[in-house]
Structure formats: structure tokens, C-alpha cells
Image (cartoon, rainbow, N blue to C red; front, side):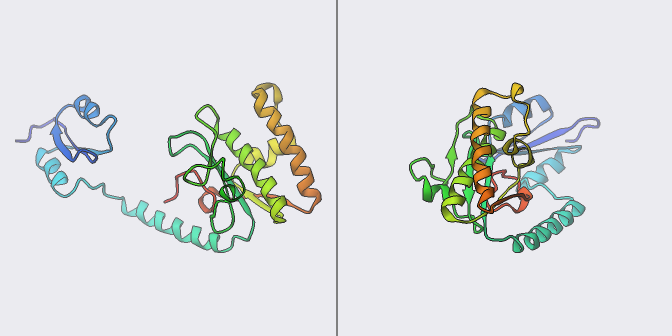
Length: 219
């Protein structure tokens, strides 16, 4: 039975295979909290039930779907133009702390190859939950520089403007940064100078096409 003015909140707890409909947003919110879920509001109870019966799938706006497809197409074109080099990134999207990743053009973990005792099951180095993503990007560049020199591969790419154009070039306000960050900045600055004297370059690329991407944001 539908009632005017009411909203019906349909929910599906994917991890528990439980579904239901409620007229209380607070109840819906409390039910889905902490669960892998999908939920949606409807004006009619029949529509809410139909959505659940059809698998509780979110509909993608046709325009957004088209834009997403175009973005994927453009990214593939850009990825095809990437050159051989060392790629680095940092991310927290897995929820286990700040991870850093350094790879070759094909996305193969070079950290796992050069520092197997430090890497986790994903081929990354986990710095822990007390490290910021910016510190992670700096640490990733530190390892990328080390590996690049050993590999004699003098092209490094990353998607952190802050680390590439500021911190690793000595352009930072030291008084606003933790001591360990400043200490690592100084080490990276020196290592970058050695790398550049050997003919190396460090360039920015978009995270969407970074083979080492840890942002978990790709479409």
C-alpha cells in the first residue's frame, strides 16, 4: 500500500543477502551501516520492491555513462603513448594504511623485485596508518630514484605535483611539516640531484594512466 508524502527506503545487504523496505531513513541508515550494501529511496513501495526484485542495481545516467566511456577511451589512447620508465604512486584506498608502489611501464612491481622483504602480498610497501598520502608519495619517489639508478632507467613518472615540483626540489615550508617528512625531503633532494646529473628526468602524469596507480579511482 502506498501512502502520499511517504518515502520508501529499499536496501540490500550484499554480504548477508538480506533485503528490506522501510519508511524510516534512520532505520535504513542504521541497517546498512558497516555492511556492503546498496540502497535507494522511492515514492512508491511497489517501485521499491520492483527495484529489489530486479537485483537492486543502480542505474547509470546515460550522459554520465557516455562521458565515462569517452574517458576510458581517451585514457587508453594516452596509455598507449606512455614510454618505458619508472612509475610511482601512493594510496590509502585499500584501508590498510598508506601504501606505496613503484612499477615499470607494464605495472610490474619493482619494489617486490628490489625489496622483497619489505613488500606485502600486493607488491607494495605499507607505511602504516599514521603516514599521510603526501608522505607516501615522497617515500615512493625515494624508492623510485633508487631503483631508477640501479636499472639505469632515467625516466621517472608520478602523479603528485607537490612531491615532483615542490618537495623534491626544496620548495617547501619546513616549519609546517613533521620532522621525519623534512628529513626525507632532504634525502630525496640529494638523490634527485644525483639522478639528474646522470641525465634523469622526473615528470608528472595523470593518475588515470599511471601504471603504478594506487588511487583506486579508475573507471
